[in-house]
Amino acid sequence: MNEAIQYTQNLLFTMGDSILEICYLAASILFIFGLKKLSHPESARKGNFLAAIGMGLAILATLLFHRMDGEPIRNIPLIFVAIGIGTILGWLIAKRVKMTAMPQLVSVFNGMGGAAAALISLMEFPHIGDELIEKSGMLNGHAVAILLGLVIGSVSFAGSMIAYGKLAEKIGDPKLKFMRIVNLLFLLGILTFVVVILAQGHVKPTEINWMVYLLLGFSLIYGVTFVMPIGGADMPVVISLLNSFTGVAAAMGGFLYHNQVMLTGGILVGSAGTILTVLMCRAMNRSLLNVIIGAFGGGGASVDKEAGTVREISVSDAAILLSYSQKVVIVPGYGLAVAQAQHICHELEKLLEDKGVDLRYAIHPVAGRMPGHMNVLLAEADVSYDKLIESDDINSDLPNVDVVVVIGANDVVNPAAIDDPSSPIYGMPVVRVWEAKSVIVMKRGMGKGYAAIENFLFYNNNTRMLFGNAKDSIQKLIGEIKNL
Image (cartoon, rainbow, N blue to C red; front, side, top):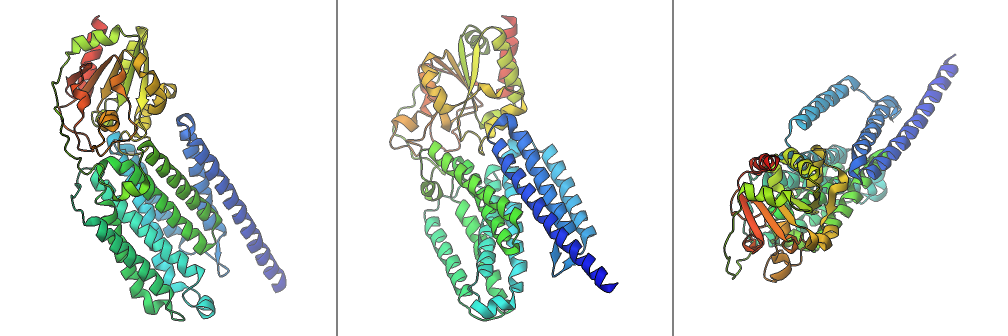
């Protein structure tokens, strides 16, 4: 009888392992398909849903079938309580956050992922197996994965929190040239600590735990100093880079636990974030190294050039100009998000199309405060994805456009990127709005953009300024157009 019971238990354990591996495989496939669907706005929601199902399946399968030393996971009720609390908080935050604060939310969520990876490393370091220590000392794959997860996760967490502060305009851009040297020293210190820990030989992990905590402190400080000098205009690139860091840190956890789904998810996030970072740098015509150590967005150089005269346009004149145009292009920027004007902008679009106007949107890759910010903003207002045209694709047609309406954009329409070699944004691809027949710029005032440099587009002969809150200005435009 005892042999039968033992056989049944072993069979259940074996089946449980098989079911767990199958669930992990299914979850990994869902992650891949979900990421693929995220490549297009129309399928992005479905892709996010598929990835969420994959994560839910992986968590549930782990709780039900994962065994540690032949024993099932304990404290499952507490785990479900923690999952419930996190789910409720995440749901409430996501439902209540404004679109203007979406980049900040992304930074915080990304930072939480980095913090989780760092905490896993802290918990696992004292439990490095005695067999590994006896065989190869501290220089083993388990210890390397732990230390890399700790460093990368800590940098991602601290850096994301600073990015949040910059995006929320709670932290400024310090003009400290020696920050580059400080960053280099901290990076060398971190690498030195990692080498010293791995070179400790056959010691118990608990005996050098203090060194790991010291490494944690250095990594957190480096995360702060790493992001602190980077200007606000580079925040989309920084967010993408930190996101890739979090993915790599999560992949280290997959190595630790021999967990395929955790490894797959981390690799997908890390590789996707890295690719996006490279593409964003190309969109700005800058190298990643230049973004990290450069001063773009942290205060532009003064330009020895006469500003000229600003020409304003009334709402009624703007309404007439738009109504009798054949082609109109709208260039949205962060000011559109601040004014929450995406819905009223879509209403203007429909009104002009009813009058036979061909209207499209020029989307610059780094417009806003995070990758795809303008796409998300306009999708919320049900703007057709077919009308969202990348800046590189629409630039060639701008000489044929009657009116370009710039709403809250600044640096991405600055001609200094083309004709001013002394400008910090020189060489950055921009939307060449000045090539259109007429340009209407909606701004609250003559303030500079996030790159903190003058925009001489505002003084061009074919540019007219429509000052005021974007939402109010568009609302008045709609009223005037309806009366025509």
